[in-house]
Length: 112
Length: 112
Image 1 (spheres, rainbow over the protein chains, first blue to last red):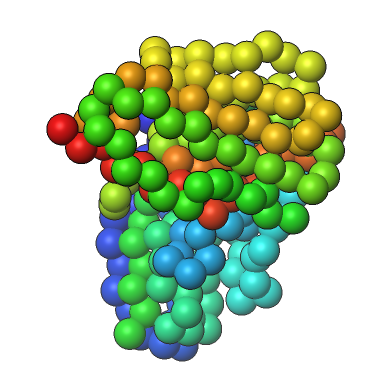
Image 2: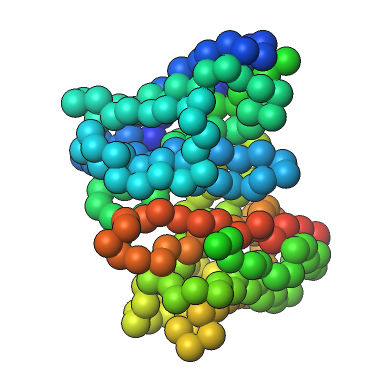
């Protein structure tokens, strides 16, 4: 158990819908990272937040957005969902930028 | 730029050794190694920093060749529990934080 929690564990929805994935970092960790893992694209970095502020963006689509709240939990919002958005979405947390990233158990999103 | 991992897959007998390589075309600040079992989150193994020493984790060790921008992960006297997909994640700049770019993964299967 990494100490990072993600909800929900599974999410099944239809194309065109909007969903919100939630991540709670380990106690004391200020950074949250979001990753997408699909069969054909592998593990892709999406976005990094540090203490509420966006620090880095990766291959994140405009239909996706994220935020980190004052209590440090983070949410990833995915809208206008397409079949290709089906994937495992992981969040990871660290204490600082040179620290180990601890991954949550992931949310499996299926878009039908 | 995604780092290149080789080999893509390796099958071992329990007790055998293996080496997994991770190469980048750009100068690296750090290399992170993770192991992921099917359906689970990636689990941190070790991190190697530029100018740092070789790291070890039980019978798994790694090195970082700054001249070649390559890291190698050594699985020594492999155990059944070593089976999984190994990913390297590379970080180019300390200032950018841990914006990791992951390689395509190396599947390892350890047989009795």
